[in-house]
Image 1 (cartoon, rainbow, N blue to C red):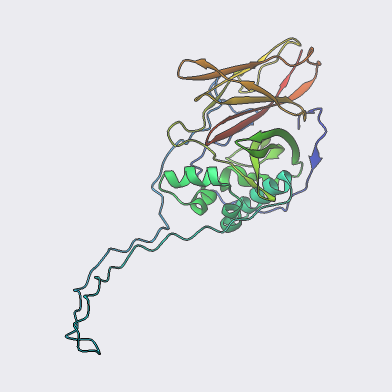
Image 2 (cartoon, one colour; image 1 turned 135 degrees about the horizontal axis):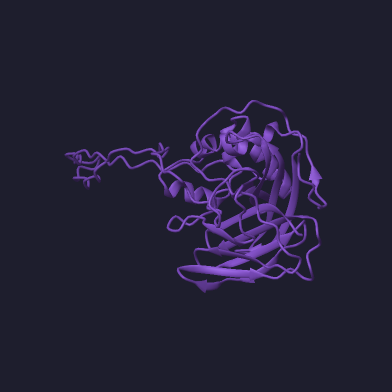
Length: 311
């Protein structure tokens, strides 16, 4: 049964397609009800780094001897010509697409991933995610194919729901976290799930940033409170409870309950990273809440979404 999260959200019924079973190399930033895991952390770093084919052409330089003609048409020896060297072909600029709203960008992206349309999915990926993927020696289309088992399950969801959380300007670009919630058949499980996917406005349109991580630190985001219960669910909290999270770096955290605009909190140094604590205004009501936590630090833009109860 889908938990009753009290939120003003939009509903979309996706096209039903069969998702192919391909092992994912990315840990999806999600909370999957009923699935166990680290009791304290939501880790969105890569779990493996398979060798990825590169699409950049490589041409070995070759040279020819300079040709010096005996004379020019005027009977004067011509200057020698420079050796002809075959240069590396410049990599092609990847085709990109944008959408009119954050929601349409994310929905079109997950649907493209689910139906195996890697060209459209890759074209909707923003520059930070693209830069991270290419820093691993991979190509964006290959990563979209590997993401099909995880994100692709949303195309089969009959109760998919979206919630938009506005962060404001992040790294000088309007940014919104789009949360998908509902029954998903991704990664070998049929159950309630939430995914938080950042969307960024580039020029006049929106693109998605599903893997906007720094190559040296990844996209690790640890939820400290609420903790996880033994069954993997977020633990029940008291009405006066606080939300806290850790991340690597020195960036800003964003916290939101339901579909409210996010509260920005500057991280404080904690060990090798940063921690932020947010005290929601007033006491939290005694019902089920949708929690969204995001973190931004340069090339890192990552987010988590989950549900918890207040006693």
